[in-house]
Length: 155
Image (tube, rainbow, N blue to C red; front, side, top):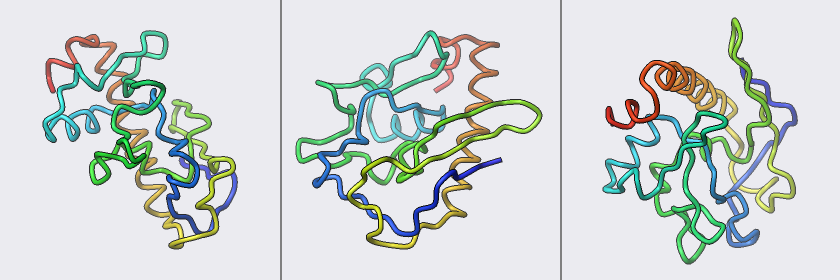
């Protein structure tokens, strides 16, 4: 189940106005994200780190910014961005896995693109969020079963 806690009607990414605040290190990745990015010619060792505490994969940072943020603040993998980035202007505030996985999304605070651009397609946001939940559940199971190294070897 996907819960959007606050509504936003329109949005466009105004990354130059805010200095690409959302493009930070530590963005959570699914295995599908890692595969898609690797197919672009990037080596997982270059852009990937494993959070031992949370048992998840994240994008490495370079000087406090996302590995894939370009010099002009642009996303260098825009058409292949991680699912978490596709959820913008919403960010994940809570995920719980029980009988039915639940994800709660909240708008990014003080985003200059809020209220501008195209109408937000909530069905697409919900579909991407649901895909993230399912892919992340599979990743959690695979890490428990195969370990981090085993998961990476399958990429």
